[in-house]
Length: 423
Image (tube, rainbow, N blue to C red):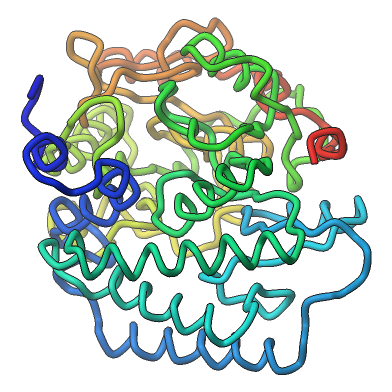
């Protein structure tokens, strides 16, 4: 091996089909790395009863949809999609019949096919949810996955499903569907679900096409090695106006975002973030703000993180938990301080300055990544603090993001019309 990584060792030293290890990578990784109380739902604390109830509700929903024949039989082209936001609604306006994939519980159109397919799905769902690492990669588990693959392949083929849109190409069921559509030689798309914090030719590269929000995101992907012809720009369904105005920028009501770590490895390089550094990040911000006389701030952890774990480490007289929904919180905030995040764009949309704080040593951030644009300090529109001194200067001098960068990263209006020439 060129580097130490358990899944790479299995590829090189066992008879397991390498493509199957890649298919299960995210699930296998979670059994290794997705642990610890800093996660909201760590793997070792999985609530089996809640999982059981969730699956029962999903099954009842699926069977009821099957019995009522909810899938339209009209002549519209059918798309399997579980893209985020209101993308599916926009596709329906383009006269497509949008159907949810079998693993998504949805009260609208949902793919069931027949009882045989759904029963095979349930078997695989149990394997993915419940099996330990050893059993997940066993011949028995892989045979169950193959059986579901074949059933779905045949169902998509005979039902004339024209294409697939997914929010990522990492999670197991999304990747399984992508592979089916590759064999069917029908187009598949990843619809970008967040502002990338890194650009890597190995990520978002499983599908035929990538749908991004704006020109600058496409440019960043192309600069990272992606094929330009594979990338289409849609804009974002929620953000429908151009932005170019002075941003609120005071210390009156500060919102602090956390620097989260992930529970799986990326495809390009093995990294394991130091969870101590995500606390260090907040201590560092507090140290700078106290120099400015700030007495209290709002704290907003990433949705995947456990708030109570953070509070065990923090001065709760200084950090007060933000309990509002994000848009309401941003409307009230006069300054946001955080790392590379989609909230950067959301802050600008709601008129508040976002101070990018990405502490780095030798160009590497607190969790082992090289910051990506526009968070790397190379864009004149986005001041970036790379240490406490930088952060103090940005705050003290009231340096602000040029809000027009929003228009570089999000095209308006939202338009999915390009998809007609690809399906």
